[in-house]
Image 1 (cartoon, rainbow, N blue to C red):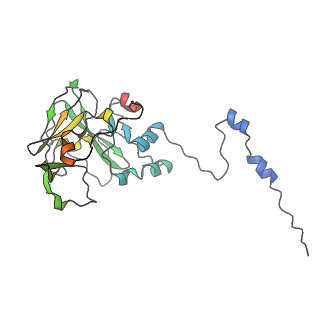
Image 2: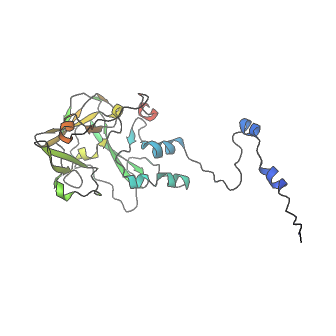
Image 3: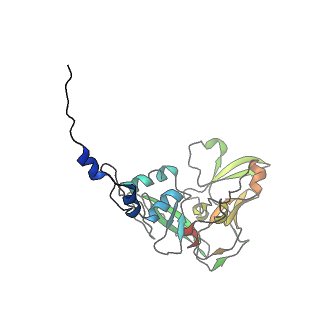
Length: 255
């Protein structure tokens, strides 16, 4: 026996939400169909999540390259933006629950430099900036201060973002860990992410680590370091940074 089942008429609903290609062309701000979530976030927030860079609102000529942020902290950045809990906040003395801001007074920072802090995903992030008119190429800072750590003490999942390798007779001897009270201001110099933004090179001299300025650093620029050529012979693998594909730098770094 055949039963004739009448389907409900869905055409009014379909017509109600149907958007023709021409409508999309001439009215790109139409509300999307029901069930598709919408989010609002700024260009600054998007750049920070995608490129790890945030502007300092106290001094617009300064910006933080977030190369020192742990991947665990970065992984929650887009989630916070999409849920409306924006992590973007940059100020001279951020207030974070249960986190005591670092006392920068005892770091013995050289004249012409300062340590600034910003707040990203409820994590305080530091960077070293030039306050002089210019720091000339060839200027050396150091040595890098920290606790000596034997190679056997370092595990694969340890935080090594504040450590430098020290080599002896071509072999890895130990690490210098800049965390904690034994470290100095050089611990807050972040790593460069590509060749164009690097302005410091790390050098090993008689068992100590120094930073040498490899190009003039103008006022308001963050100091960013990477391995010097001497580490190529130590490590036996290429350690140089890659050039950007188009030879340019992010817009924020030029502002």
